Length: 98
Image (tube, rainbow, N blue to C red; front, side):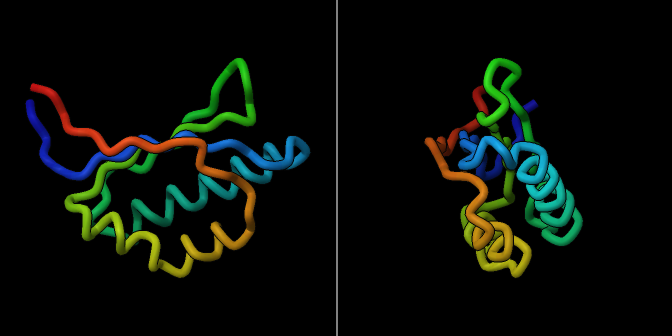
């Protein structure tokens, strides 16, 4: 079944290898807040690489690009970004293939 929307896959790298658990906890909290408080977001899921625990993936689905952009204006998103725990290695905007 095709699900329209604005899909993002973001690869993140934890900046400080001594903060892996703190960073993962902070991102899990961001995921929960995003899903709870942003009705335009239906997927915001964190994955951690087994071979390299500093490597993370975020799978995201928003109703629109506007909803995605609004995510970055949220206080909790700004607070997470201000902590400078991760850096974006790469990100992809994708479409579902039927």
